[in-house]
Length: 113
Ligand SMILES: [Zn+2]
Image 1 (cartoon, rainbow, N blue to C red):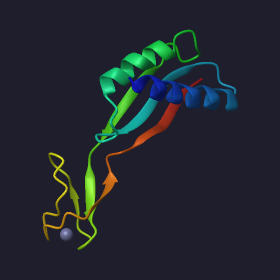
Image 2: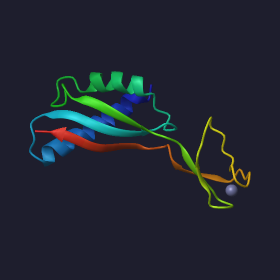
Image 3: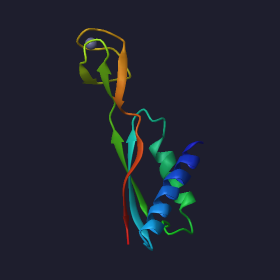
Image 4: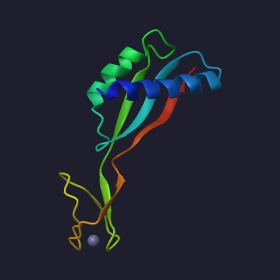
């Protein structure tokens, strides 16, 4: 389950930020998670609860914002949302598609005192 190491990474960032700001407690962490990041949100929540135990983030909530999948056609520059993982340009039918969003795994903000 790679969600465990991801959860550890998130908590590391949060605790470092907390220390850098001389804070005491973390209330919430907002995470941007792409639908194609390969991370299972429920599993991540479970791991988050486990790795925050006995830390300054023990009572923190992990707020996950799912980022939809968008692609750009490399042939005609058209941008579109990718449905059902069909990487095909709706305008020119090209399959040369670059993923613009949907792979994010990013701590957006941290609420702390
Ligand atoms: Zn196109």
